[in-house]
Image (cartoon, rainbow, N blue to C red; front, side, top):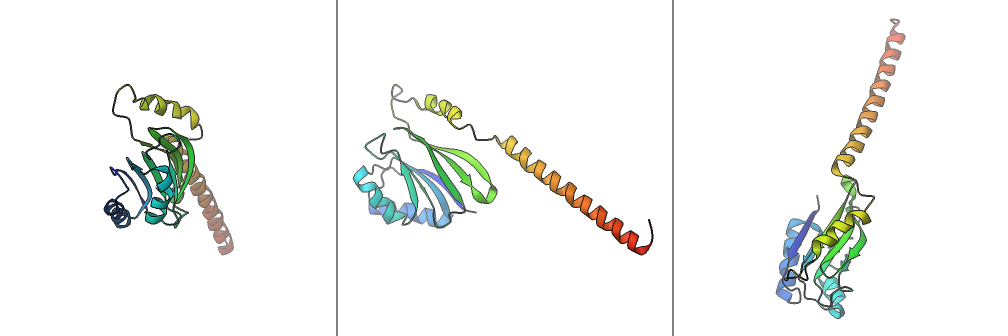
Length: 176
């Protein structure tokens, strides 16, 4: 299974920090990475991402904050693992809808890097409003119910098939 990682890297401009992130990602087979406090300016972001994660896709909150506070990167070398759809960004939050294809599980991912002062920190107001913007998300209970119902129907059909096959075998043998 491909892992997910979220890490406050406290700066991603230095070569040794880039190597440290890459080592951990390779060791843990990470396919979806949220990095906060990157401190990478907009003119350097694409260069840094291409150098570290060649061929991977990424989203940032650079449109909302000049200092590259949040970076989300996901693997395209295994596109069957994660499909990422952008939902919303601000200076403190980057939110996406993620589908983990092998498990057929869709969930929301919000990478949060809040401001330091209470006056600036309005993270929870934004987070609460996201529920209204993600109406297609199902709860875990709903997902489990759908899977359980599919399993029950499949199991029922297999049982009916086996009963019919068994009856046909008995008829061939002459018993009823």
